[in-house]
Length: 105
Image 1 (cartoon, rainbow, N blue to C red):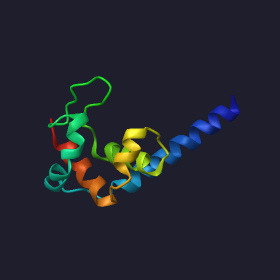
Image 2: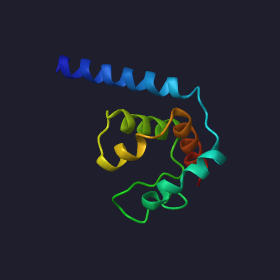
Image 3: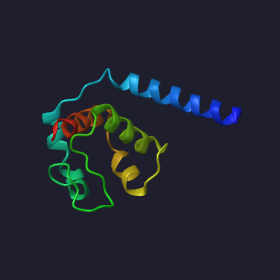
Image 4: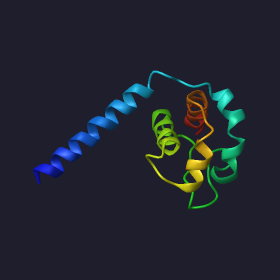
């Protein structure tokens, strides 16, 4: 039980640091909208997916979206499609896409 608690606390601390470091780079939603055309095929033109396999992105928190994209890009989070899609994204692209989808209702 102590090992589980220690592992959980370590994971929470790492996630907190990751989110805190991302808050410093707010993206440009207008630039993100232009970049989002590739995402629309699965996540919908307005960030609302028509398929239950793919999540809605509209209205998600900016830091959460950026974190997920960075984890896909690094391979920390594995999904063959998203890993491939995120490989070519720069940190600025991720910030802009995250700002765009966070701005949607």
